[in-house]
Image (cartoon, rainbow, N blue to C red; front, top):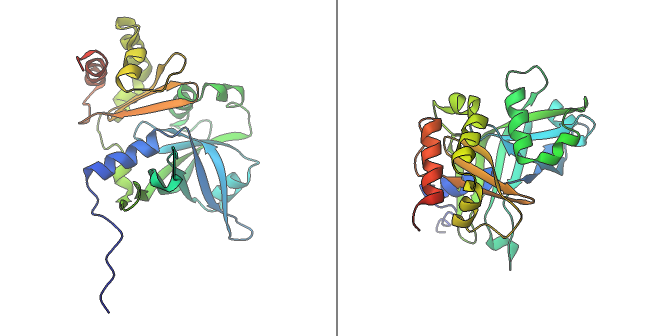
Length: 249
């Protein structure tokens, strides 16, 4: 009997970029954890943001079933990727297997993650500081990408993480960088939305920057743009964003 051909394609840069965008452009995700009492998989829905290196972050209540499960066993899977018109299976989706680390008040990453989460999810300010809520940072271990029929890939966790020495500097100056951009170019978010062919919506705003790209948001819409190469510092990010917004199509 002949060996069956593998359904997996060789993972290339195009697949890695698609996977990163599917993860970093998601406002929410399906999360699967292991029920500590029965061992059965338990699936739920969570709001999603990213840390400065692209690692996914969730905000959860200590009372929820998935929080109790993650406290008992840090293994979790996230499903991201939105179906469009026609067959839902024809659209890209990414399953990311992660290890969860709780980020509570007083943790060195807490304020940064809180700021980045609120930049993406403004309505979360209604409950983000409730004492029974905490963050989990989900460290990608490996991922399975399905880019549509016949486009299956396996990725390693590092394929989804921004490997840049500029991460900490960019994080420290993120708000200042965005405000500087807006001060010099008040219409920059709308220009970016136009250039990226964003859906018609209300006003757009920049809700996140990092060495690999930026995010813009308007209501329920979120768009992620990845730079061709990693930016080396905040000035480089400003330059990249300005060129995208104002260069001749």
